[in-house]
Image (cartoon, rainbow, N blue to C red):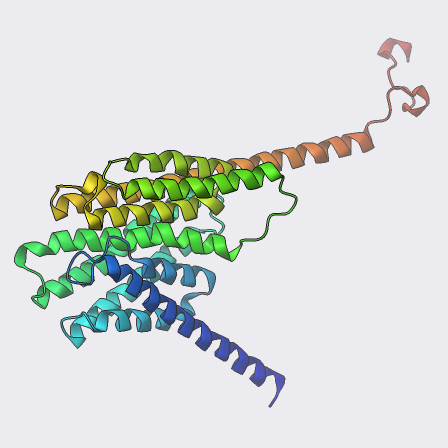
Length: 332
């Protein structure tokens, strides 16, 4: 067996493991998402598998699409009205992240999300545009299978679309941050103290969100703080924590979700989650881009100063001046 053949076998084995890992993560996160289902055991206000699928495509490549399809089929098979319906929903759930990946790849999306344009692309192309496919195919399949009433298509479509989009906006930034996460070096004690305070405040805000008192708006100062001081590294986990707390409050009917119909609670919940995720993501990207621009300006100024020091002679030393330096034209 030559080296080329062994290398192909090794790459093939790695690809199979990656496909299996994506399928397992898709299925496990889908089971967690279904714990907060709202419509027919299949539609939730936050669907983490879409984020896992898109993050896998961005980090590994389109070759892992069979893992997305396998995980989607396993998660849709048991609650699905029939096997053909489950296959149709699986097709939509697979095509949606592939479409989002193609759109992001076309506009030059960078996984660091250090530019404001990257954040905008993830929100509008990766989340809102790509997930139209899964919501339309899934809701249409349930309606054709008579699993939904005649007036149930659009409410189901709305929750499906926003749930899939929220999975992208909340989960993808978190996974991309974890991929490049590293232990901070030479961080002062005050920085560690501020990070600990941010964690404690996040927990406190989450508790307040699930109480009867409607204090859900306290999440936005927290997200702004995280984005300004720690950028995406803190904004992404905070957005996930805030959205999860809001979903728990909605399912319990507490806080601002008390005494309203299911449709009203869905609209309020998804509007809040979308605003929170976009605030954290867009602000963190804008601050990162500003910091990167400032760093480049400082680096350019430093290099210009070094070049000037090498080129310009010491004006305080007359012997270092070139011949004729400083003479008036009439003196020559």
